[in-house]
Image 1 (cartoon, rainbow, N blue to C red):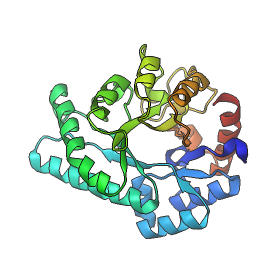
Image 2 (cartoon, helix red, strand yellow):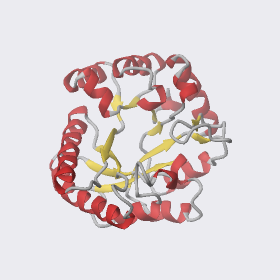
Image 3 (spheres, rainbow, N blue to C red):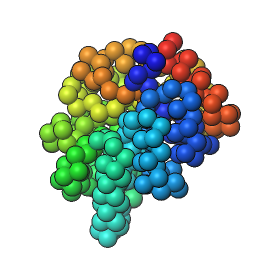
Length: 270
């Protein structure tokens, strides 16, 4: 168990499982952490989710996701702020202090305005999140997702957003899938010292089978996962390590098989 004390199942890795099934699967496999997604929590119900996680002896590494701030109209932007406030409340209720922020895409062709909407959205959310003891973890995504998921596409952009706030308010989530390619990766990880709130692992496989559902199990691709982990840990981060894999083929296999493979690859490649 000692080898797995930081291992967390991000629920998207076993997308075919309900949250109840994922909780039971983690308990069977002695995976101590779980990272639920909000739509899975909603299906089960917040109070039931909290109770089952607690009864299974699991800890919640993060809740995914907040963000998605940019929108064409002011009223729609406010709706998104309101939804983020609900996400903060859900994170606090589930017992995690990290809300992962997938910041949102451009509502039109003006990417700079979209980035300003992200900054404005975070500014509105920070005081509310602080009142609940929840930190906002900005997760930069790979640039291929700029049009439909996040205009925050580098650790440099994420660090700049986060540095407007105290480290106990806004930080960074490092996902190897999104940042491995960055020529300034290790400088930016060092820059994030004291602000890293999460570390996500998977692999970049060749060829990428699908733009969204194309992540691989650790060891099946080209990412220097252990080197990135070492750099993250040099900043002082010693929190949970989430395995987050979007992959149709992995989703189609039995969840227990996926968790077993995840544990094996964690030991050998993370």
